[in-house]
Length: 107
Image (cartoon, rainbow, N blue to C red; front, side, top):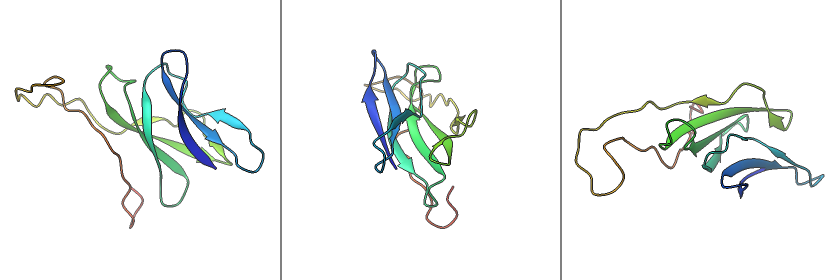
């Protein structure tokens, strides 16, 4: 099973590709930019970056069961944080990028 990002109608959505059958199914369908998918060490979850919440970059996770996203399991893991720092690019809001999993406990 491979997770990948695909441009779709002015959004970037995550999809799962079953290498054995060649079938593709959506992981996200929220009209946002969803990128940088990372499988958990045990292969049961995917962490990814999305602009789905307030159009700012946040880390989300979704559970995968039997080779498909488990319904209702997309969860935002990060909160909005106003850094109160002046920035040349973006805004005062923190942006969360490049998710990784802990190799010891999978969180």
